[in-house]
Image (tube, rainbow, N blue to C red):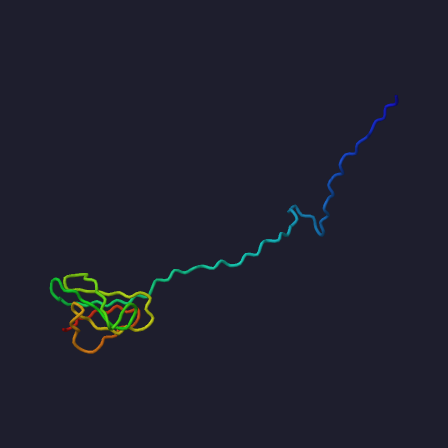
Length: 132
């Protein structure tokens, strides 16, 4: 029987990369394709436009001051109770107002304040002393 020896070839060495120009000790620059990112949309938190009406008047214990008019949540037909924030201080606050508010104040939603209708611009805090 005849013995044959089969020779296997070793893998070829990696090819050397030729650089153009001068030889430097710095590695060659490689270019990579970076993913293009769209700018992120940033949500800016805005504070709502507040319009506050404060009335300084003592209407007596057990009575409530109401507001009627034209504006967010207001009507000339039915009043909205104002919040008592002190012994003689009542307040009503409207959010997200874009137009002036026309209003009148009432005691117990029955007795109108004297004088013409009052108006306050959007985003303004006003303090008044109504007369009945």
